[in-house]
Amino acid sequence: MRPVQRVQLEAYGALAEVTEAGGATVLQTPTAPGSPMLNRVVGLGVDRPATEDDVDAALAAIGVGVTFYVAVPPHAEPAELPSWLEERGLEPGWGWMSFSRGPIDPPRFVTSLRLARAESAAEAAAFARIQRVAYDLPEELEPVLALAPERGWECWLALDGDEPAGAGALFALDGVCYLGLGATLPEHRGKGAQGALLAHRIQRAGELGCDLVVTETGEQRDDRPSNSYRNILRAGFVEGAVTANWLGTRHERRG
Image (cartoon, rainbow, N blue to C red; front, side, top):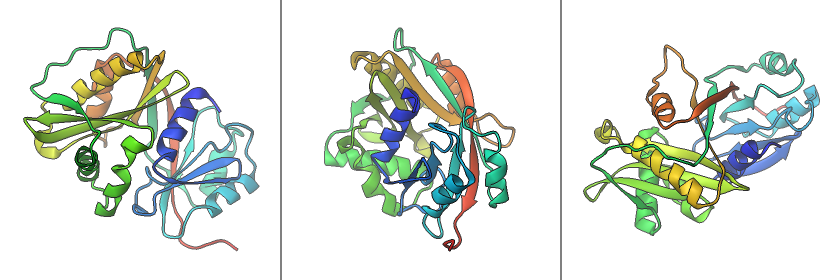
C-alpha cells in the first residue's frame, strides 16, 4: 500500500472497527450506520488485482443495514472492478479529490479566532461535538470522536473567545501528515476557522518532521458545495486524483 493511503487508513482505522476481507480493509462505525464516509471498504484492488470473490468477501463483511462506500482509486485493478460493483447493486457516489503539498512556507490566514490544542477531556468533547453537529452525525458518535486525541490524532480547536467554533486534526505517519476531521459550527462559518486550522496544521507537519502533507475533500460538482475545496487550494495544495466512491447499502446477509 502506498504511504499516503497507509496514513489515511491508520488515521480512520483508529476510530473504527476494522476487518480485513477480500484483500481490502473494511472500516465500520456501528454508531453511525447511515454514514458512508464512516463505513468504507478501502484498498480493494490496490495491493493486487481484485477478483469477483474478493468483491463478494469485502461486501459480506459489511454489517446489515449499513450504508457504505467502496473506494476505488484510479490505480485499482482490474479495470472491470467498477462494473463488478455495479452488478452488485452499488452506484457511483460523491468522489473525493486528493491534494498534497510540502510543509514549507505555510499560508497566512487572518481570523479573529484563536487556536488551541484539544487535550483535556472537555476539549476532546468539544472537538467531537463540532464534528457531530457540522456533519449531522448521530449523537451516539460523540464518545467515539472524543477518543481521537488518544488514538494518534493531534486535534485542534478554533475558539471565538472561549466558545469552540471549529475543529481540525492531523495524523502523522512515516513522514506523511494527513489533515482530516475539519469542521465548523454553522453559526461560526465565515470567520476563517478552516483557513487558520489548515495553515496551522501545515506548520505542525513541518515541526513533526513530515515532508509531505495530504488531505482530501469531495470532488467539484455543480450540485455540491465547494468551500472546503477552495480553502484547500488557497492553502497551497495541488490537486491529485479523484477516488471514486461506490455507494451501497447492505440489506441482508448473503448466503
